[in-house]
Image 1: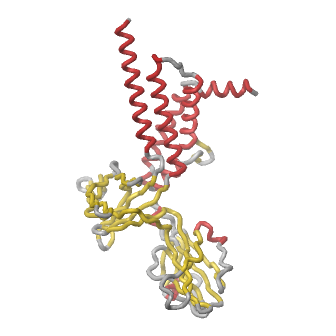
Image 2: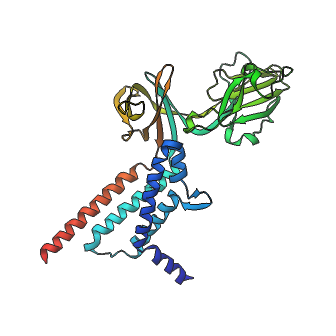
Image 3: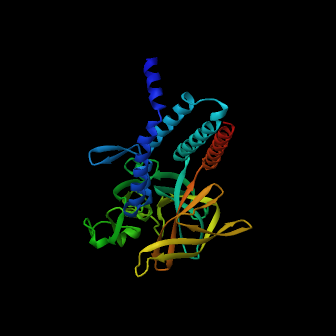
Length: 373
């Protein structure tokens, strides 16, 4: 057993593993970057880079986690078992340590980083960021009309919609239909329309139907339809969807239950104002060659004007803002940022400095030895 472990550790420490793994990593980076055009940034990231296996039809191929994991094992084994621990090799050892810190930083980022997005129309200011795919149905309870501060009694994740437990409500809540990306149609045009049914709220005028998912997950309109029975006010079929203009209110036993559905929302410790969004098209076409956003960080008395470009993100208070895409609304241009909160943001800086110092030290030692020969 010990011989087998030693044999595996010896193989892992061989330098030729890098020459097998690096071409795979380069191909993965190219494919993952190019396919962003068709499947979007979020999908490309999770399909190619944050995955152990990529399926090419029935053929499994190594994903980003697998390749980087093997590189980390190779470098760790080389560092621990095959390093020549001497002064003349100190530069190489330091360089290997820097590379290890970079890989460990990537692992910490992968585990702990929180990825969300922000949508800002020109001239607008907001502290809110939203999860790409996570949505919640929140239920608030207020004791009569004089209760100005309703209490949140339920937070139901959309990802678990088939197992929602609403038994604590004093009326029946029955899920009827859900769609990850919905098309809003007139109620009379829905396939199950029945003039004898009771439709309440917005469901009196509109219905939801499935449509294909969008390339960018933040563009999906998620929603569901449900039925309420046994309430004092509000019985009938209802619907809820992302960004619905009015919450649903159900009254029962002298209390009001308010239903709000939407994307999981977080609040930044500061806000961002979009001064100007600029898109540079290829000559003679409407295709974007590049685009950037001129923004103002509003943090108390601090008003900091800066720019976010496609390859130049903004970093502020542990959050990194990437210019991911844009949209055009009736009110004007809209800028969309990917927002990442990375607990391991220091690792790349430390690893790069250690790696650079190691290479510089190695060059100095090498030239010193040649001059003394």
